Picture 1 (tube, rainbow, N blue to C red):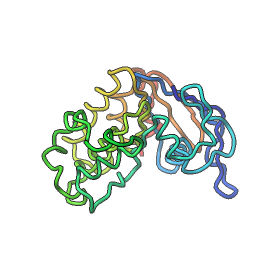
Picture 2: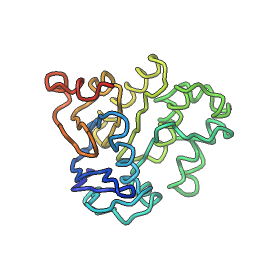
Picture 3: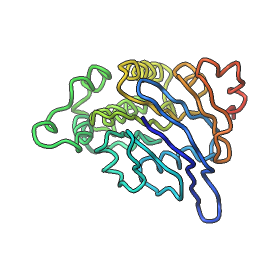
Amino acid sequence: MLQVAELNQYYGGSHILRGLSFEAKPGEITCLLGRNGVGKTTLLKCLMGLIPAKSGEIRWQDNVINSRKPHQRVQAGIAYVPQGREIFPRLTVEENLLMGLARFSGAQAKAVPEEIYQLFPVLREMKARRGGDLSGGQQQQLAIGRALACSPKLLILDEPTEGIQPSVIKEIGAVIRQLAQRGDMAILLVEQFYDFAAELADSYLVMSRGEIVQRGAGSAMEAEGVRGLVAI
């Protein structure tokens, strides 16, 4: 389980994250919603060790990981799909997926896990194509597949629906739900697309100006007025 307690971060004199506390539990999808500029991506970068937390505690599987470097957090079972996907455009789909096996050694890192191709059949069809030749939706599936290749126990997704056609959004949503239902993976989903988040969320968090201003069960999002809090 991921546990975040009183997390603070600053950029210059600006207080970007203001005492954030929340949990993400195995077998559940925790959706973090909020408008642009409220600190969502900054939070994720703190969770991954890409920027240090100024104060507060990040605890993963009962261990404080504030001082761990990004690759050490990956080794500990945390995977991150950043906003904008950040695939390797000149590498093939298969080569991109193999990059996700970097936490493993030897024979374990030589072949793409069959599960990835089962979750995203289009990646099998296109495994010899360069990543940069894929559509936006296919690149997003590739980015998620690459993250899953490391067999994470926590999957962090930063706006996976951004710039993607509705049919692929539906496919990605089905995969996220399937992963959660296995029961061994915690999923933290950052999203602006309310309908996508509401369909998937087991629990929700709403961020505004660096703070979590509302939280609750995913099934209560509509009744609790979450749509109005995050509408642009």
